[in-house]
Image 1 (cartoon, rainbow, N blue to C red):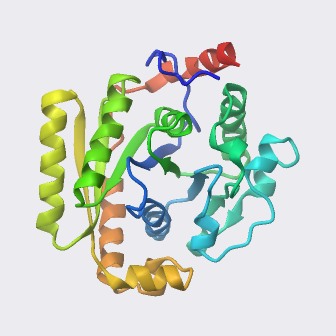
Image 2: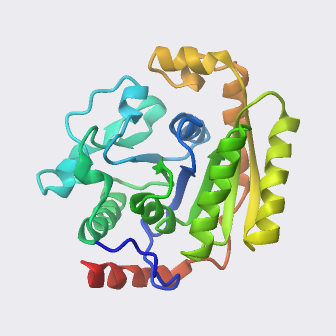
Length: 287
């Protein structure tokens, strides 16, 4: 299977025409990325947006566990031809839609080119048939695996999540380096999780942005930060989103601000665009 390292940036297809498709990714595990995705989706839903969350950590998905849900089916059943996306998608808090991943299925951790094409096709079909979506948030796995790269370059927007820890910052930069130098991505947004103060979040952004400007020639916009808050840990233990369990907590206020900021910022212009439609041909040649 190709790892797409020779991918032509012009030869890509997008998921869900007319929908804001946003990948949420991280270089390092343990930075709270999945928590960010779930709470951001609920906050966006409260602002009137119809959201679908795709758990794209396909072999080790845990969004359902985080929310205390018990889906009967997952995306593996779709790829095996046993179920449609409509059969698999479940409803979460505040009406958000969730496409669960498998847990402990090694084969899904590294999709073939044909399976990647199948995922896109099924998602596009579902987005039309479900009655309309505004935003699709894709919770990628951490790191730089082929699945992670695929879901990032198949999205219109990329949000990178990090924490103030030096290893998390280094890995966030490394992820952007791979996506920019090997796959032509030029625009990213940053969320800094678990900060002691807004100032600390801004400092992390400035450090990464400065390095990106000097060595990567990428645009990095600061979406905002999430305050360090014990309520997050309590909500995880309760298998609830913090914005639902502790709506007045510092973290919940942070998520509300992030959702508003995301809606205020238009998607990057002049990137990917219609040329992404050629991705199908590239994937077909790899299959």
